[in-house]
Length: 295
Image (cartoon, rainbow, N blue to C red; front, side, top):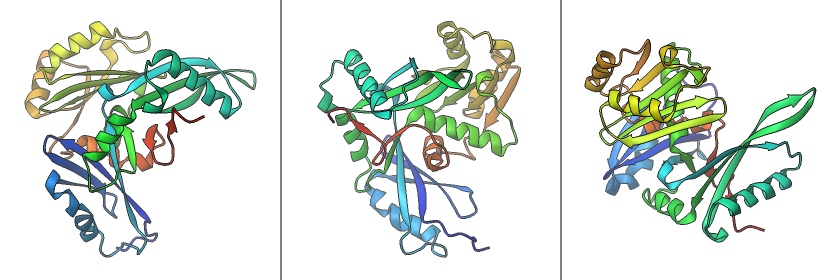
């Protein structure tokens, strides 16, 4: 069936895994599609994508290429601030915080931030939760160069891409997830990653790939459960191979576990990047970023 509305742009998630580029995008039926190319073959990607949408592509249709920046290349600061009404004053305050915490020359830095209302008294907004993200321009440039001759349009944050993919897959399976009561676990042959949203703070636990049971113990020692979420009532949403998943179920016996099948969603980070246009989360992009050397 021909779509009623033709799309003017297509989001394409990209993730480099060793010498290959993992690719995810959504077709006109909104089903996720996955491809894998070597770095040398990446120049063929636009033609491959056009072949997928021959019947519906408009003349001015463009592909939006999205990848992610890993935490080791990213500085993060989450804090509470009195509500600042004027955007330029908030921008000035964020720059001041960066100057206080990062011993890096301003012209070498690029940053982004978001603000969420946290407390109101009556109708007045009093306290804001501010999340600041910064990276060296050199690291951003190197990340973008990995995908040449393609030009990245958006450089997302790795943890946010994973969360998007988790929420999407759980929703497809008909599962309802409450953030403050959920531990997201991602494992591939290189990394084990635990993510948990606690109020307005995203706990991020990145380790080399190891048995999940041992890592869970280390995670809870480093990040004791909050009053809202204790270990007994935590929902575990897990993306891992069948053997790791079976070992976790046998050794740890979680009360509630939602398993995401890696065979159905083989390139999970790329999937989260491809979902970027459907969610309003923070990112470095050509249209929404701040140069710390700007006056």
